Length: 455
Image (tube, rainbow, N blue to C red; front, side):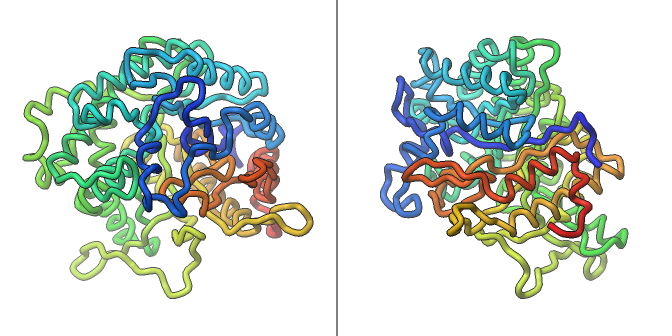
């Protein structure tokens, strides 16, 4: 069903699992700052310890091997490597990732390194953060340090994770770090600097790694699903999915994807926000659109769309009682068919699902195991839809389940459990859930077990 070359992976992020928040010379990030504010995180929790992966990485890699995972997507902590965000290297921090990469390779697991998964250095935030026009160069210098150190062994690189989220939720609504509430002009400026940072990082990675390096980007894949197979509904879903007006401010696809993959901002987006872009922004587009090798995308769910009155697209509300996860996100497996299909048709690059998964109400049963039947069903439904897209010619190279293990889920703290592996935080004991073993069977059979009727 899936090719032998397919990447079957799991994903994590540094702040969510590493802990060791001030160990071995690590600097502060905006998430350290944000979590120290009373009332920002559920139950005033923090990632200070999280899953203690910094000290337990060898055992965690061993679990990955047991589950037959052949790709592991993780992020580097920028302030662990550069405590002030620039200039001074923290060798102990860099050495941690050096050891982690070696351990992965020793166990037959390809590392997929994400340079930025939201833990922006506190000291650079105090200098203006993404609003500072020097921020793209700060990021590029950091990317170069990582590429020089790890590029002899790491072939797969992702520059930035979900810019829609850390810009909108972190800088507009303030429910994520750094907790700001900026105006439109400042949001547009920060976003433009993020895109320049991506492009400059791509250039540095290319310069400092081998010919086998593959570079991608991992925005949110905001997916719209046709309400039926009628051509009018399909076109309506595409229209909404690639409209800059479809989400609040910049929470859309095309503002973040068109510049990277097409070298231009979307026309409808420029009509809305073009007057707020920094002067001379056009000259930055060749850097922003530096060629990449794959289209990484995080897809969890989608909205249904139909052609309404006079052919205008209309969102279709889910019926009462529609299935939802513990995060109250709708369960829409079709998103993993239509999302990759629409993105591939539009941008023409190989697709890697860099995140997909669900939050569930997991706990340890009396038999000492974690029975998460709903996640097993979720994985099966979504992967069947991904297989459908692959069968129809969409070039899909990999799937990374979010997440490898339960972790610190940002503003939700430890309330949400999205892992294949259960983490008992007081003891730091790891227990692979039923879904972990089901996923292992998927990997071992190349997806053929998905065709079985019984789970």
